[in-house]
Image 1 (cartoon, helix red, strand yellow):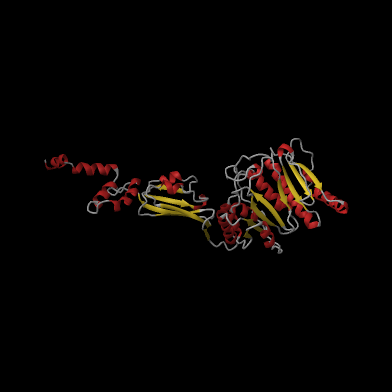
Image 2 (cartoon, rainbow, N blue to C red; image 1 turned 45 degrees about the vertical axis):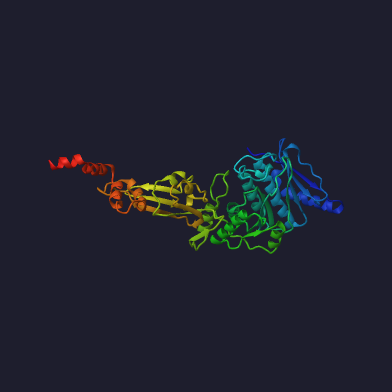
Length: 423
């Protein structure tokens, strides 16, 4: 059940500015009116603060912590931008509930910040939707960043309104900034997404580069960029934005799951009229591509058993085949590679649009002597290079035979069988 947040409005200006800002805050409250119902106690606190940041002295909201939205209300565009930030904060508080302490849920294992920065995905997705749906003054750009330091258990969390009216900030837990959340923002209608990644975080930078490549592949051009600081992101986004493409139908998924970059990219790629097949490779690509050394593979199926998503399958008919479905491989986890006893399998980061189903290895699964169905025969071919050259053909034929043919071959080779034949 969702929490009903407690909303407070404060202005620390004085004189004529205070009167003008209180009137503007009243307009802002009217635009966010659906949150004005009196919530039961206790409730998470969202504090809307208008004033100089150096002047404020704000309590943390008691044992529930609080979320602070520092807003400017000078001008119509600023109020529209502030309304989007307030709606986003309120949706976050609704989904996250108690804003205090470590969050439990899908983000708890990402090794990131303590406190409610580790909110579950429904809260972050709700905030993202509210930000983009609430900004109705034209094209908007989203600036995504990760919290670099842990929060104290009941520490406040602040969202500061930038001075660019079409720019909206969203802070994420450590490890959450990936192609999925970037493409989700484009899917919801963001005209541009700028990710703030420190220079020392090479892994996150690789994920954003993959997201940029995906945006190019699905016809979104240069709408995804990378900045090294928040000030750098603001400078990049000061120029007026081009309107976003009409967003595609949202991808259906469970609310608790992280945004699936592959599914969103495929939905956006299908919207592109050209639909040119694309391959996005390199670190950070949200997918995997498998390759097999056919001479070494024994088709034992251990990699199939180790694959957690079902991307690898083994088909046992007259032809035994190892197949790979790229739509089922979200990233190279390495389990299949580790399970292969002969190290014949490799999986590298790659996303195919559209997804591919490929046959990696296929061999006859029939008896070498009688031709009947015998799937185990497909595993024998890989033993050839390991056998002595003089005995290899006869031994391979024997090993590739079904149990019945092996028994007859063994029986005919015994001395008692030869004696009985002469009599």
